[in-house]
Length: 212
Image (tube, rainbow, N blue to C red; front, side, top):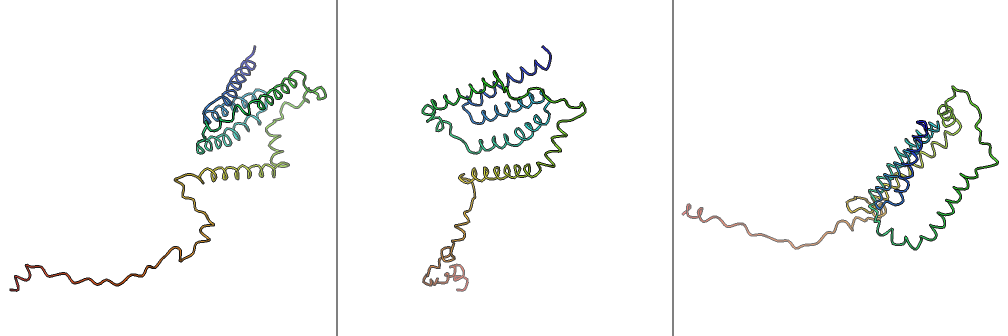
C-alpha cells in the first residue's frame, strides 16, 4: 500500500467519524465543529483526487465562511436541545425508512454503478491546469451567477444576524412603525399647577443681637 492509499483511508476514517458525531452530538456547537472537521477531510480527499479547485473551494467557502457563520449563529441562538428532542421518537419511523432508502441507493450506485456512462476520462495535456480552466469559466461565462450567489449569501448573513438580535433582552432595536405613529402630545404633557409663594427666610438671631 502506497502513501496515497494510506492517506485516503486515514482521511476517509476521520470523515466518517466526524459525520457520525455530527448527528449524535448532544451539543449544537460541537456538532458544527465536527461538521467543519468533516469538510476539511473531504477537501483533503478532493486534493488526493487531483481536484485542487474543489478542495480549495471547500476550504475557503464552507470552512472559511459558511461554517463559521453557522457556528456564530448557533452560539447566538442559544438552542434548547431538550425542546428539540421531545418529538424525536414520534418522527423516528419515517426518518428510519428514509435512511434505509438513501443507504440502499448509495449501495446500488457503488455496487452497480452507471452502466450507460463511460468511466474512462478523456486524455488531457500534462501542462493543463484544472484550476486555471475553471477560473476562466467562472470569471467569463459564469460571472453573473457567481455574483448572484455571493449576494444571496450576504443577504442570508444579514438576515440571520437581524433575526438573532431582534429578541435579545440587551438589544436596542427600534420599531420604525412605532416611530412613525408617535404624536407630540403623547410625549409631552403639560400639567397645570397653582402658583406657590414662599416666605423669605428669617434673619439669623446673631445678626439681630449685633444690631441691638
